[in-house]
Length: 211
Image 1 (cartoon, helix red, strand yellow):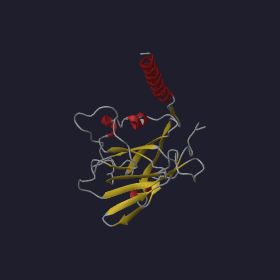
Image 2 (cartoon, one colour; image 1 turned 90 degrees about the vertical axis):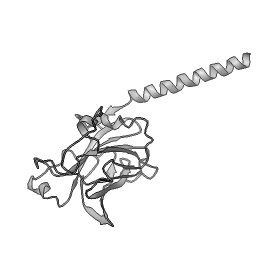
Image 3 (cartoon, rainbow, N blue to C red; image 1 turned 60 degrees about the vertical axis):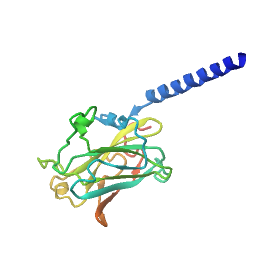
Image 4 (cartoon, rainbow, N blue to C red; image 1 turned 30 degrees about the vertical axis):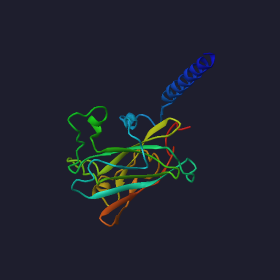
């Protein structure tokens, strides 16, 4: 009986410890480079098991197929950053952030064309999607939004992915918001029947109050 009671005590201690650990992690989330409207969406992956590769809902639809890929590095720009969560979202082919009728959370603003990955030990990430359309107002070039969450709890928005040779990019004389994570203008390269946008990201680069 005493031995059984000992097991119960150990089990309760482990549960309490795990619970406290989860609570501590949540309390350690730190928004950097603020303000950032919608950065909280990086947490909305729910019970989905995140992998280094994700496919957005539009990939099987009609449009220019796109692979958004690259590596994420530690602040030294050399060491691969593992277990980093990257969230992206973008417009549909008409340049609209459409969402499902039963949408909740930030999907109501960001639309349903969004996804999450978690980098592997080499810092790799890839998304398969369609190249986003330009806003109907043509007030901005086509782009992809991104938010990054580090294992230690720091999270912040990234400079948008813009596409080199987009006429609007130069017509509007677009200036980077921040260059968070590094240069966001990517060159589209053809690989079979898919376009590839390759971009490497450095944790904390150009992010205010990062340290």
